[in-house]
Length: 184
Image (tube, rainbow, N blue to C red):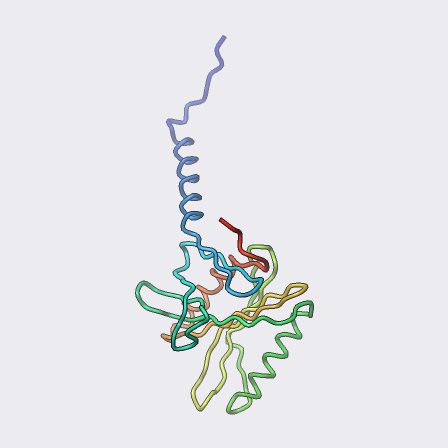
């Protein structure tokens, strides 16, 4: 006696095919960059970013560039530090430095939060504002701390769209991990 095979009208097969194609499209569109010694970022198609030289900053060192279509929205500078400390010590140190450099000695935290990167490591960020040469400066600082290395990822908006910069850098750094880029 034959067993009845449920009929899905091809819907289940279509769902599986669509999911597989979507996964492959995301994987194919992902770009992996070694943005610092021992720090990798994998950018998916959800983030419009490149890793290239910005001649006005440093003609020899590539930076992360965040785009919106043809418009350059933000730049990200990476600063490597010794790791192994409590996260709070890094934040206290950078806030003290910024206060010392600020025209009025103040730094305002506009937003803050945390998220997990690709390795499952918790990253924290703060959107900071301070006065520099009588002009307000706003940057999104992201921090990831490992046993040997810690990294500051400092994003500066070129257009003033701070919300877009913050949202996009969080999406971008969710795809980061401490380590070396995988070889193709």
